[in-house]
Length: 232
Image (cartoon, rainbow, N blue to C red; front, side, top):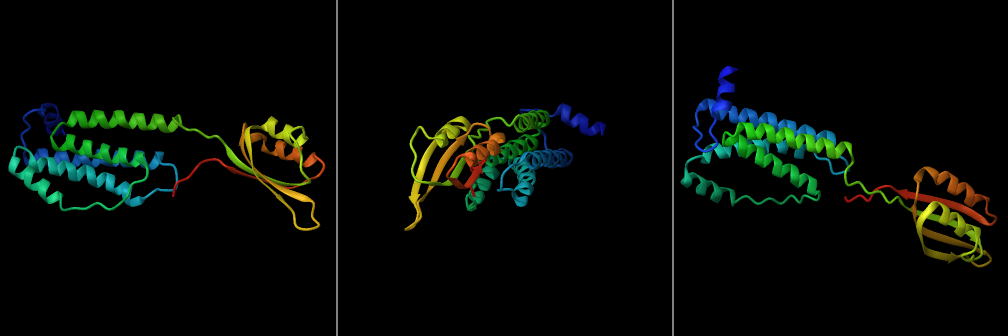
Protein backbone atom coordinates (compact mmCIF):
# COMPACT_ATOMS: atom_id res chain seq x y z
CA UNK A 1 0.00 0.00 0.00
CA UNK A 2 2.87 2.37 0.82
CA UNK A 3 4.45 1.61 -2.55
CA UNK A 4 1.25 2.59 -4.34
CA UNK A 5 1.02 5.85 -2.40
CA UNK A 6 4.67 6.60 -3.22
CA UNK A 7 4.02 6.05 -6.91
CA UNK A 8 1.06 8.45 -6.81
CA UNK A 9 3.02 11.11 -4.93
CA UNK A 10 6.17 10.83 -7.05
CA UNK A 11 4.44 10.56 -10.43
CA UNK A 12 5.79 13.34 -12.65
CA UNK A 13 3.40 15.32 -14.79
CA UNK A 14 6.06 15.96 -17.43
CA UNK A 15 8.26 12.86 -17.67
CA UNK A 16 6.44 9.81 -16.38
CA UNK A 17 8.39 6.56 -16.10
CA UNK A 18 6.42 3.50 -17.15
CA UNK A 19 6.90 0.16 -15.45
CA UNK A 20 4.77 -2.88 -14.79
CA UNK A 21 3.71 -1.45 -11.43
CA UNK A 22 2.81 1.97 -12.82
CA UNK A 23 0.84 0.51 -15.74
CA UNK A 24 -1.10 -1.82 -13.46
CA UNK A 25 -1.80 1.07 -11.11
CA UNK A 26 -3.00 3.21 -14.02
CA UNK A 27 -5.38 0.51 -15.24
CA UNK A 28 -6.65 -0.23 -11.72
CA UNK A 29 -7.23 3.44 -10.95
CA UNK A 30 -8.96 3.90 -14.31
CA UNK A 31 -11.25 0.96 -13.50
CA UNK A 32 -12.14 2.35 -10.06
CA UNK A 33 -12.75 5.91 -11.28
CA UNK A 34 -14.62 4.67 -14.34
CA UNK A 35 -16.86 2.58 -12.13
CA UNK A 36 -17.49 5.61 -9.90
CA UNK A 37 -18.50 7.61 -12.97
CA UNK A 38 -20.78 4.77 -14.13
CA UNK A 39 -22.49 4.61 -10.73
CA UNK A 40 -23.05 8.37 -10.82
CA UNK A 41 -24.66 8.03 -14.24
CA UNK A 42 -26.83 5.15 -13.02
CA UNK A 43 -28.13 6.96 -9.92
CA UNK A 44 -28.71 10.32 -11.61
CA UNK A 45 -30.17 9.08 -14.89
CA UNK A 46 -33.72 10.09 -15.74
CA UNK A 47 -35.78 9.39 -18.84
CA UNK A 48 -36.50 6.42 -21.07
CA UNK A 49 -33.17 6.06 -22.87
CA UNK A 50 -31.31 4.09 -20.19
CA UNK A 51 -28.88 1.51 -21.59
CA UNK A 52 -27.00 -1.10 -19.57
CA UNK A 53 -24.37 -1.42 -22.28
CA UNK A 54 -23.74 2.33 -22.18
CA UNK A 55 -23.07 2.22 -18.43
CA UNK A 56 -20.61 -0.63 -18.90
CA UNK A 57 -19.01 1.23 -21.80
CA UNK A 58 -18.15 4.15 -19.51
CA UNK A 59 -15.93 1.81 -17.47
CA UNK A 60 -14.42 0.13 -20.50
CA UNK A 61 -13.66 3.44 -22.24
CA UNK A 62 -11.84 4.73 -19.16
CA UNK A 63 -9.65 1.62 -18.88
CA UNK A 64 -9.01 1.35 -22.63
CA UNK A 65 -7.97 5.00 -22.94
CA UNK A 66 -5.63 4.56 -19.96
CA UNK A 67 -4.04 1.58 -21.72
CA UNK A 68 -3.75 3.55 -24.96
CA UNK A 69 -2.00 6.41 -23.16
CA UNK A 70 0.43 3.95 -21.61
CA UNK A 71 1.05 2.38 -25.01
CA UNK A 72 1.85 5.57 -26.92
CA UNK A 73 3.84 7.24 -24.13
CA UNK A 74 7.17 8.50 -25.44
CA UNK A 75 6.77 6.92 -28.89
CA UNK A 76 5.64 9.13 -31.76
CA UNK A 77 5.71 6.20 -34.20
CA UNK A 78 3.37 4.12 -32.03
CA UNK A 79 1.02 7.09 -31.62
CA UNK A 80 0.77 7.63 -35.38
CA UNK A 81 0.27 3.92 -35.98
CA UNK A 82 -2.47 3.74 -33.38
CA UNK A 83 -4.24 6.75 -34.92
CA UNK A 84 -4.20 4.98 -38.27
CA UNK A 85 -5.61 1.81 -36.75
CA UNK A 86 -8.38 3.65 -34.91
CA UNK A 87 -9.35 5.55 -38.07
CA UNK A 88 -10.60 2.25 -39.52
CA UNK A 89 -13.30 1.99 -36.84
CA UNK A 90 -16.69 3.44 -37.73
CA UNK A 91 -19.07 4.34 -34.91
CA UNK A 92 -22.68 4.07 -36.04
CA UNK A 93 -24.51 4.55 -32.73
CA UNK A 94 -26.31 7.88 -32.58
CA UNK A 95 -26.34 9.52 -29.14
CA UNK A 96 -29.45 11.66 -28.67
CA UNK A 97 -28.83 12.92 -25.13
CA UNK A 98 -26.07 15.54 -24.81
CA UNK A 99 -25.66 14.49 -21.18
CA UNK A 100 -24.47 11.07 -22.38
CA UNK A 101 -21.87 12.78 -24.55
CA UNK A 102 -20.61 14.67 -21.48
CA UNK A 103 -20.18 11.37 -19.59
CA UNK A 104 -18.29 9.82 -22.51
CA UNK A 105 -15.97 12.83 -22.70
CA UNK A 106 -15.45 12.64 -18.94
CA UNK A 107 -14.49 8.96 -19.13
CA UNK A 108 -12.01 9.79 -21.90
CA UNK A 109 -10.34 12.52 -19.86
CA UNK A 110 -10.15 10.33 -16.74
CA UNK A 111 -8.57 7.54 -18.77
CA UNK A 112 -6.05 9.97 -20.27
CA UNK A 113 -5.11 11.27 -16.82
CA UNK A 114 -4.69 7.75 -15.43
CA UNK A 115 -2.75 6.50 -18.45
CA UNK A 116 -0.35 9.45 -18.36
CA UNK A 117 0.22 8.88 -14.61
CA UNK A 118 -1.44 12.13 -13.55
CA UNK A 119 -3.10 10.30 -10.72
CA UNK A 120 -3.83 13.32 -8.52
CA UNK A 121 -5.57 15.10 -11.39
CA UNK A 122 -7.61 11.98 -12.16
CA UNK A 123 -8.76 11.48 -8.56
CA UNK A 124 -9.44 15.13 -7.73
CA UNK A 125 -11.10 15.75 -11.10
CA UNK A 126 -13.39 12.73 -10.77
CA UNK A 127 -14.45 13.73 -7.25
CA UNK A 128 -15.10 17.33 -8.33
CA UNK A 129 -17.13 16.26 -11.37
CA UNK A 130 -19.03 13.76 -9.21
CA UNK A 131 -20.02 16.49 -6.76
CA UNK A 132 -21.20 18.67 -9.63
CA UNK A 133 -23.27 15.81 -11.06
CA UNK A 134 -24.89 15.16 -7.67
CA UNK A 135 -25.64 18.86 -7.23
CA UNK A 136 -27.27 19.14 -10.65
CA UNK A 137 -29.34 16.02 -9.95
CA UNK A 138 -30.41 17.00 -6.41
CA UNK A 139 -31.31 20.56 -7.37
CA UNK A 140 -33.02 19.55 -10.64
CA UNK A 141 -31.06 22.37 -12.22
CA UNK A 142 -32.45 23.55 -15.54
CA UNK A 143 -35.82 21.83 -15.11
CA UNK A 144 -38.65 23.63 -16.88
CA UNK A 145 -42.16 22.19 -16.57
CA UNK A 146 -44.78 24.40 -18.25
CA UNK A 147 -47.45 21.77 -17.48
CA UNK A 148 -48.86 21.65 -21.00
CA UNK A 149 -52.20 19.89 -21.14
CA UNK A 150 -55.13 19.18 -23.45
CA UNK A 151 -58.64 19.93 -22.28
CA UNK A 152 -61.64 18.49 -24.10
CA UNK A 153 -65.32 18.87 -23.32
CA UNK A 154 -68.72 19.08 -24.97
CA UNK A 155 -71.05 22.05 -24.68
CA UNK A 156 -74.57 22.57 -25.96
CA UNK A 157 -73.83 25.30 -28.47
CA UNK A 158 -71.21 28.01 -28.88
CA UNK A 159 -70.12 30.53 -26.24
CA UNK A 160 -68.36 33.89 -26.14
CA UNK A 161 -65.50 35.38 -24.15
CA UNK A 162 -67.82 36.45 -21.34
CA UNK A 163 -69.03 32.88 -20.68
CA UNK A 164 -68.32 31.22 -17.28
CA UNK A 165 -66.18 28.59 -19.08
CA UNK A 166 -63.72 31.31 -20.09
CA UNK A 167 -63.65 32.61 -16.52
CA UNK A 168 -62.65 29.15 -15.22
CA UNK A 169 -59.91 28.79 -17.82
CA UNK A 170 -58.50 32.22 -17.00
CA UNK A 171 -58.54 31.35 -13.29
CA UNK A 172 -56.61 28.07 -13.51
CA UNK A 173 -54.56 28.47 -16.71
CA UNK A 174 -51.80 30.89 -17.50
CA UNK A 175 -52.47 30.51 -21.21
CA UNK A 176 -54.95 28.60 -23.35
CA UNK A 177 -55.59 28.22 -27.06
CA UNK A 178 -58.63 26.84 -28.84
CA UNK A 179 -57.52 24.00 -31.12
CA UNK A 180 -60.84 22.87 -32.51
CA UNK A 181 -64.59 23.30 -32.09
CA UNK A 182 -66.38 20.49 -33.90
CA UNK A 183 -70.14 20.48 -34.32
CA UNK A 184 -72.02 17.29 -33.60
CA UNK A 185 -73.79 15.06 -36.06
CA UNK A 186 -77.19 15.86 -37.53
CA UNK A 187 -79.67 16.37 -34.73
CA UNK A 188 -76.93 16.73 -32.09
CA UNK A 189 -76.46 20.33 -30.92
CA UNK A 190 -73.42 19.58 -28.76
CA UNK A 191 -70.11 21.08 -29.85
CA UNK A 192 -66.86 19.30 -28.99
CA UNK A 193 -64.15 21.75 -27.87
CA UNK A 194 -60.42 21.04 -27.61
CA UNK A 195 -58.07 23.46 -25.86
CA UNK A 196 -54.32 23.44 -25.35
CA UNK A 197 -53.75 24.93 -21.91
CA UNK A 198 -50.82 25.88 -19.72
CA UNK A 199 -51.90 25.06 -16.16
CA UNK A 200 -50.69 27.34 -13.38
CA UNK A 201 -50.75 24.70 -10.64
CA UNK A 202 -51.33 21.01 -11.43
CA UNK A 203 -52.42 20.36 -7.84
CA UNK A 204 -55.61 22.29 -8.62
CA UNK A 205 -56.62 20.20 -11.62
CA UNK A 206 -59.50 18.57 -9.76
CA UNK A 207 -60.79 21.97 -8.64
CA UNK A 208 -60.78 23.19 -12.24
CA UNK A 209 -62.66 20.11 -13.44
CA UNK A 210 -65.17 20.46 -10.63
CA UNK A 211 -65.93 24.07 -11.54
CA UNK A 212 -66.31 23.14 -15.20
CA UNK A 213 -68.77 20.35 -14.31
CA UNK A 214 -70.90 22.82 -12.37
CA UNK A 215 -71.47 24.91 -15.49
CA UNK A 216 -74.75 24.03 -17.14
CA UNK A 217 -74.36 22.40 -20.54
CA UNK A 218 -70.73 21.18 -20.07
CA UNK A 219 -70.33 17.42 -20.54
CA UNK A 220 -67.71 14.76 -21.29
CA UNK A 221 -64.76 16.63 -19.75
CA UNK A 222 -61.32 15.15 -20.43
CA UNK A 223 -57.99 16.56 -19.24
CA UNK A 224 -54.68 15.10 -20.42
CA UNK A 225 -51.59 16.49 -18.70
CA UNK A 226 -48.16 16.06 -20.25
CA UNK A 227 -45.59 16.75 -17.52
CA UNK A 228 -42.53 16.37 -19.75
CA UNK A 229 -41.75 16.32 -23.43
CA UNK A 230 -40.08 12.97 -24.12
CA UNK A 231 -37.86 12.14 -27.09
CA UNK A 232 -37.70 8.49 -28.09
